Structures are given as C-alpha cells and as structure tokens.
Length: 205
Image 1: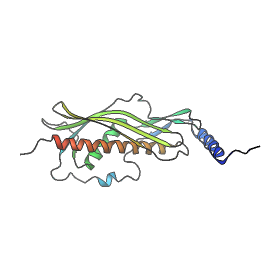
Image 2 (image 1 turned 180 degrees about the horizontal axis):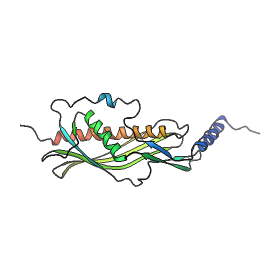
Image 3 (image 1 turned 60 degrees about the vertical axis):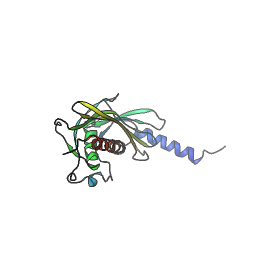
Image 4 (image 1 turned 180 degrees about the vertical axis):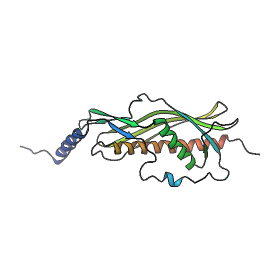
C-alpha cells in the first residue's frame, strides 16, 4: 500500500487547522498606518513653505456590502464567518488620505473651501479581506478634485495587501492586511491628487 506524500499530509493538517479556527465572526479594529510603516515619521510637522492647499471633503460609502469587510474560509474554502469592522470605514479611508496627502507635500485643511479653493472628496467602493491559505486585503476608492462645484479631475485608486500566511484567521492578520491594502491605495491616490492640485492651483500674484 502506498503511503500519502508529505505534501498531502501537510495539506490535510492545514485544512484541519483552518477548520478549527474558521468559525466565529472576527471584529477588526480599523487602524492606519500598518505595522512597521514609516508614514508617521515621513509626515512633516508643518507644511513646507509655499505648499499648495487642498481641502479634504467627505468620502461616501458606496460599497455593495456595508455590513462586513471580509470573510473567513475553512481548509476546504468554505465561507464560515464574517469579518466585521470596528469603526467607521469612510473615516478610516479619509484619515489615511489626510496623512498621505501631507506626506506628498500638500497642506491639508478640514474646513470648507473658500471661492476658488480646491477640494478633494470621494467614495469608498470596496474594502475586503479574506483568509484562506494566506491573508488578502483589498481597498478600492475613487476621488475627485473640485473647485466651486466643478469637477476638475477624477482619480480611481486601488490597493492590495497581505499579512502573510494564514495560521489561524486572526483579527490581527485581517486588520494588518486591510491597513496594507489601504496604504497602497491611499499613496497612489495622494500622488495623483497632489499632481492635480499643483496643476490646477491658481498662481499667487
């Protein structure tokens, strides 16, 4: 009789481990930046001299599924639990963008723009994490640059991130994966918005 290979045995053990840990919803704290990120250190204490100003507006929740931000699957790929966010998803995205816009060299203000001022506002389209053999996080957002009610440019952005191998479908792993995905999306979006702000800024006399 042929013995099962080590690969088959390992896969079976992982499946059993995943099944044992797969039940029960995960409640994830939405945090930013992700662990080990240099974002905070990279943000200057104050905007550089001559920095362009952008007003940060609201971000609306346009996700298809607002009641959860992901799911847990067992060793056979079956959906066994949901991942639920602790905290406001749109504020989480907005706060991350605030940090990354400053990191991109802009002066970010929260009040409503005066006549001629530039405002960035947007939508949260997808926030999702999954845990099967590895953690997978994904964030999709869209923003627009506006002056006096007129949309000057639109910027879609998305990011993916992972906390690595899934050894137990933990809330920490889900949260880190989402934070890394948001960082990729927010940095891409901030870069585009910063370029747009500089291109559309009204020259000072």
